[in-house]
Image 1: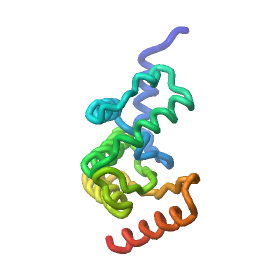
Image 2 (image 1 turned 180 degrees about the vertical axis):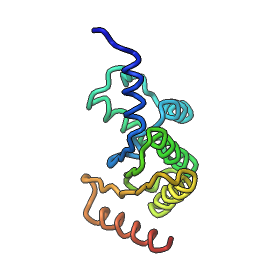
Image 3 (image 1 turned 60 degrees about the horizontal axis):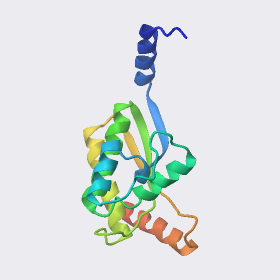
Length: 163
């Protein structure tokens, strides 16, 4: 195959400059590779079983499983949320929908605190990147109860009303 590098460069620039939307970005699944590795090392998590060079659906779910153990404090949740927004902005994304199931985990003591951290990080980043609109979608885990789903929705309504 004869690849014209000038055409490839031109195509890359064209696609980069097209404004984009992202409707399905998981907070627990859009880690920067270095952040993922740093957090795994900090938390002493074993990731030797994951083949990062041959990612398929099974591997993706393994990455999600590990990823769910990485966000256990406000600073990490804020960092990951902020980095996701920065990374999508670099790709000329104009509208981003972040999704995550609110949880009380580690030093994040309530689901309401989790939601507030995400919304605060989004608000800060929208000030820094006014060309991008970011929305937060509360994910409902199908494995949880109807009461859990209602609680998550009620919390989001409450937090939004307070802001």
